[in-house]
Length: 379
Ligand SMILES: Cc1cc2nc3c(=O)[nH]c(=O)nc-3n(C[C@H](O)[C@H](O)[C@H](O)COP(=O)(O)OP(=O)(O)OC[C@H]3O[C@@H](n4cnc5c(N)ncnc54)[C@H](O)[C@@H]3O)c2cc1C
Image (cartoon, rainbow, N blue to C red):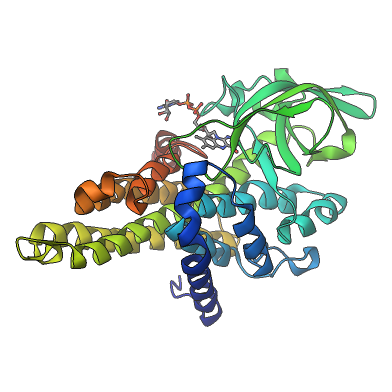
């Protein structure tokens, strides 16, 4: 595996870094404080071609490999975890399932808008009684002539309040177990689809998270993504890709903590010298610098396998598990390095400390990743 980024990828990384320093850093704390979707940042990212950079050119994308999208996600999260999360989510949980399982008409309908950043997508799988145990879902889609009628409740759904299209999962045949789950692409405004006010969250507050209720929501049969019974497979495929996004986002958080820790420890003077001269602080920073390399290699490896068309599901779980837990460890240390100043609102490391928790929960908890990894090695 070639772990060097190409010149083009390095250029994209540095352009995104420049954008993040100029446009994201000044507003990230406010986005967190106000818990609002950063529309203005996504408009600019779309202008830079960063929303659809890896989508095929025939659907308005930039035609790069998937790894390039992950590098962008990492750089965005280095300044604002919410922005990084939403960038990775958009590719993994919305663009990827449409591109992989959609028919030509569906791709033409949704992909150009997503690639241009003019449309927002949402992935509605989790339910109040079905989190880790996806198959416990109770939302149903009953065939009625040329339509399916959906009933059920989804929860913790990112972007639901602002989405143009929902990738929704519902049982078309409960008796068939996971093989009876199907997936639908449902446009916003469809009667019977209602998203409620967003949850007030601990972190990643720039992403809006809501409950979505389907009440006698009738959709034409053409809205089905894939075939009847493909839903579980589509959900797992999307989550495999989404997990690499969470790993890249987590790596951005760890890198952001490292940046902050280096800068702060060099300028903070105690006992008449910078705290960076103390071995205790140096060890925190050395561990961060080592782990961020390891994290980056793991998410890049998973993205590389996906780009090469090789199986990447277990690699994605390993990357998500390591990168998220590693980021969580280092956000604690980054706050420690800044002492009381790191504990107060408005401090970047305080924000990262809260944001990182999502990475250990969303798109499959750390325990779920361990189940997948253990299953792969104990066969
Ligand atoms: C901010 C945010 C955004 C989200 N966005 C979306 C979205 O857009 N779309 C969507 O569909 N979902 C979304 N989710 C939901 C997310 O995927 C779930 O929260 C996650 O899968 C865990 O499900 P749960 O919260 O129901 O926890 P549970 O499944 O109830 O788990 C609770 C605890 O039990 C553990 N546990 C469960 N089963 C086992 C087991 N067999 N062995 C060991 N431990 C176990 C878990 O690891 C966890 O620690 C989002 C969640 C959050 C917090």
